[in-house]
Length: 430
Ligand SMILES: [Zn+2]
Image (cartoon, rainbow, N blue to C red; front, side, top):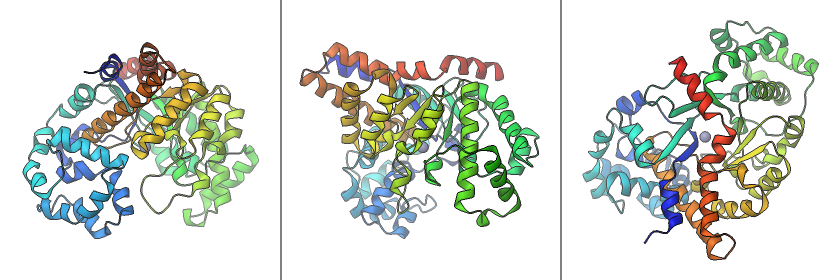
């Protein structure tokens, strides 16, 4: 019989603070076939680590090849090695709950492939996320500045304003002009362009987001206008391949700081990718720890920094930062899939180290609604296991565990993000 805690976690609408969800038209017209649906997510990295050959991986995800059994056969050995990882567990959840498959086999997959067409109908994407996954709303980073109303679920699909290119020191003069009408020729015009982007898109944005940790170190230092002006001049005059790392970091740090100042002015949290990389063969570990940003946290005490993915594997450091800096919130998005036991352990440590209003429980970080649904199931299982363990060893009562679940699944996010204000702005824009 389910406990009150289990029932409560199941019934509480879960705020999804991080996805890269593709839009409704893409789901309908260019959505996944069964193998793309099961494997077109983070699991490909574990399959490669397990030894799957690149051409077998390519074939696996090639929907123009109708031989579903043959495509699966090429990675079957790697799948058997991968099925127990967090990414593998999410694949098994999609298989069971979307396709009715308890085990992946060539025959089973071939027989179940018609199911995808049934799901790729208008409104099914919303139903899977709102109804089946029981998500309160979804915050998507679609790598762009605009945060336009999404008519497939007004008020349900909220968007981040992307600041990643600026943090990298990439100044796309043409794109900025198209968006704002501002010609960037020097530092004052770059500053005006940034202000114009916020003036235009901040009201309908739920947050600002950057994942520049994939392209540069998270280490930040204060840069003067004179230093940044010199760096900008080099960036504007030379092709990107001739820009040295120091120049990019200088301009990136300056733009990042202006972005943080604009989030304070527009009352938006600033989400930052910290920790583990998706994919294979490229993660420079020293770049990704949240401690690289201490100068930024200390400089902008009025900002709201949301540090994503629990900075895995630098989770203890992140807990210490969140304990020390009132301007830090911590997000378990994607963490339940990267390393489920570390995520659960992190929750238990966090409860007893950091005030519990600073933790967000979930973001799937996926593109398809079926994957987001599976990642939400996985998160709920992890939250339940962690809180049940706290109750079992007498650290929390069941009632206290339920209150913590409410906070980390929904209430903390509503306290940090202006969900109602953003929804109102979106409704009037629509
Ligand atoms: Zn992401």
